[in-house]
Image (cartoon, rainbow, N blue to C red; front, side, top):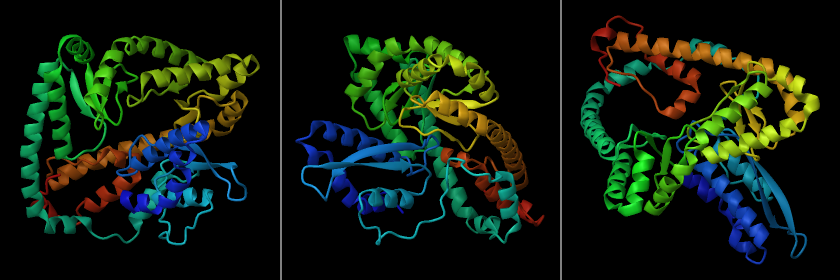
Length: 419
């Protein structure tokens, strides 16, 4: 199911919740507008699947069909990576028909809510009958080599342009937070060059302060990241980029404050590892952790229990709309507005499971890296890479690499495939 298919299937839902339908009710209009932004953002992150997907709950108001000028609240749980499941949930929440939807495919859930052992699952798949992927690739070897040479030339050109822009702007590095094709990367670099060239006076000074000896990231929105780097929204206007650069002078001072606050939260959770993803706005992250800390401080009676329950865990604080859950790598997502008693109970019940998942994931990643190196050596590849979002499912990658590995020694002589 493509993004266009999803948009088409959701037309009745979009009509039901559209903010313009509630122009006479400003509070409902504003709430639906914000919820719709979150909903659409989650859908966009499925094409391709973003490695930073987080489960979240959104709430809309819709017209009550049983009464005039009355409304009812609906909630939609956004989790996993199956767009059909999300479309069905959205339509059913408004009591709209789902009979024209295609059957739901087997979900690829990014969030671990069961006891599946990824290593055991991988081994089970390896024992099943799988097509020989290596033979298929060998039949396309010439075409792959031709395209690889073309890509190498393009990548070299883009790399040179990035190096030149780094020198001009004094940047430490330029990073793309998503998997993009070369055309879109080139567009971003052209926009950046124009942005720098057109800056004058105080604008130029603000941009220079934001860029000098800093990392520039291209993502969906413009803000200062939690590590002090600056992110520019790829589809945003130069004015929004400029505003992010101006605000950066203040935001970067929050890095030390964020680190101190994170240390306080880690201590309150028994030395837990507090994760601060670089793709998040530093102001939002700081506010979320401060909000959680305030709640913890108000519950002195739970201090010891919380400290014991949080030991050895990995914690990522999310927005108030987030869901208390365990991620695929064992991290625990904690909404900043969580009830502390509920958090304590959850950590008591799931701490061991979280740590176990993390250890298994680390073992799986080690096996993945070893298999990649062996595959590169056996097939005489220059490199073996994959899109960033696939790194969230290492067992799938292991399956694929296992299918690439040669079963017949003669393959080694001819399997010089490229990447």
